Amino acid sequence: MVFSPLSFHAALSLVAAGATGRTLDQLHTFLCPGSDPNSSRTNLTDVFSKVTCLALADGSKLGGPRLSCANGVWLDKSFQLNRQFKTTVSAVAVYKADRKSVDFQRKATQAVRKVNSWVEKATKGLIKQLLDPLSADPTTVFILCNAIHFKGSWAEKFDPSRTMKDDFHLLDGTSVKVPFMSSQKRLYISKYTDFSVLRLPYNQGRDHQSQRQFSMYIFLPNSKDGIKNLSEKLYSGPEFLNQHLPTEKVAVSKFMVPKFKISFEFEGSKVLKELGIDLIFGGDRGDGGLLEMVELKSHAYPLVVSKVFHKACIEVNEEGTEAAAVTVMMAPGCALTRIPPQTENFVADHPFLYLIREDMAGVILFVGHVMNPAVN
Image 1 (tube, helix red, strand yellow):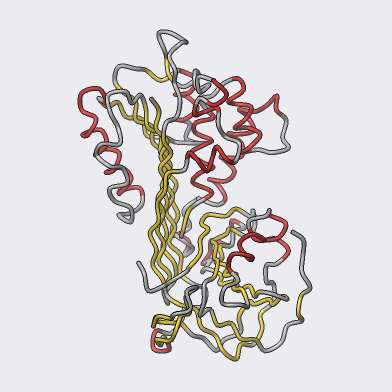
Image 2 (cartoon, rainbow, N blue to C red):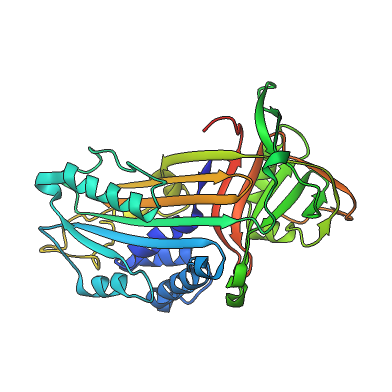
């Protein structure tokens, strides 16, 4: 599995820019917890602007990771964007959204092709055919989209000649032969009672001048079937993650991490509703609360989000990592005892969790787990 919480955050922020009333309050509470509810629009745009400037600004010209974030709005030609919403989503310092007029009523399939083409370009060709040709119909009013692309080289690349095939143990008790990367260098590893954590920094180049550092973290349970318990702890809140990030390099006696390539997609409306985001879908007998998005002839028109599509992909090899994610919205614990650093083993030969994080701001770009690296 792989998905981008940051892409979800960006897409919801885009929706919030056109929300009003209780819907805006709900989105603001979810996206900016603890901030002043009387300044919801300002808070949302400030957070998104800071995130895009810090975590998603391209660093490739300085020798750092290649990054991009793109937003798009496709509106049926029989409607017009609300003037304030249009100004907000077009702002260069914030969303910089591409705005397109399409004909969902008579040429829905053609409109979907345009969205898919935009997604493919925004993700540097990694994500193709995001939407099914029949995913839009004559009742569709708009499609909002966020796309994120990341490509980073390891600060210390792995030697391909040391990559060897070995057994990766699956949860059903069987195993598969997969290529494992290896190293004899000192690495960032911390060990705890039930799991270990590995940090693999990406090359900064001269991008360090912008006070950024991207890293991949791998959370490896000690037991071969421990991923469920570990994932519950990791996803319990940011405190657990922040308390268990390795900060010191240690000597490594045996090190194995598999190469993997994953593509994953799902429809996310149910997940968001379970997290308390229901008003944009017309929950609690609401109309969606998106009246600040589109100029409507009648406020009785039920403008709601109907579907949320998310797709992400990631490839990890000796050179580094390339990952991309797209989110599309459519409308009709506590710390554990740490074991002191010593010569360590880190053998990721069974299911593990991983994430890509910008360490200075703590922004998580991608999260996922590897159950079987032999499966693409």
